[in-house]
Length: 323
Ligand code: F6P
Image (cartoon, rainbow, N blue to C red; front, side, top):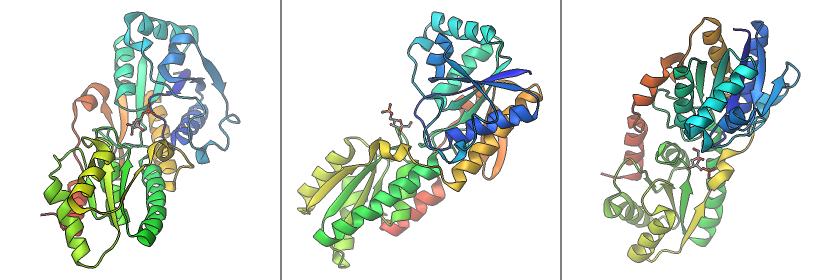
């Protein structure tokens, strides 16, 4: 392997920059050149690239966002788009590609692998919803960002004796909601993996908490829950007449300087990706299994399934008093 391309694709996540830096520095250390492809698959199709040097990735580990920009490409879904992407790789003399992103990014890498390119995927998404990996780059920072906002919200909810309904990101998964819910000591946590029983999962914990003397309440709702935070707030209002406020944390959860955990995970994963390529491996996803770094065949990785962390779910139910 003499020259590799690196790109970020899909929703950005804090730590993606640290992963780019790690790929570049590891590659240079192994005598491999590195080219940055900008705007994900869109850039691959249009030949939008930037040479990356030791110096150009300096100071990147502490920066949020992605210096290579990110996009979700519709064009790559067509045969013509994919042919143009392969042509760009040939034109740039790329022996291999490292793609940082989620499942959509990995599906794209798989189609390129099927056309003869060497590819490695790195899981980067705040949702932590990549089945093959217990951890994805950006998750810890996003949870900390959400937690900081929720702690602030709690102050004002307490003063006004209100009920706060906070919607956190996660697409179809409830990892962020569950983790943040446990960390902030929520009254109730609603996730899309479990059909919501309003009476049991929401009204009962609120009533119990009220009976115990509490006058403000914190409800964490994953964005994937049917109806979202507004529907949940409406149900609470109707059942309890509490003064309720909705806060949708939104994209603020995707920004900010990455935490130690994200910088370390991103840096190790970047290193692993280049190491695998240097050893002649292809079509692999770098992943975490607990605290260990492992790798899987992309096709197999895409077939895996990941549920909520059962231990955290059990603890959440115990602490919110849900039966
Ligand atoms: O996958 C990351 C994520 O932030 C999800 O949590 C969310 O559903 C989605 O991306 C939002 O996408 P966009 O940035 O395109 O609005």
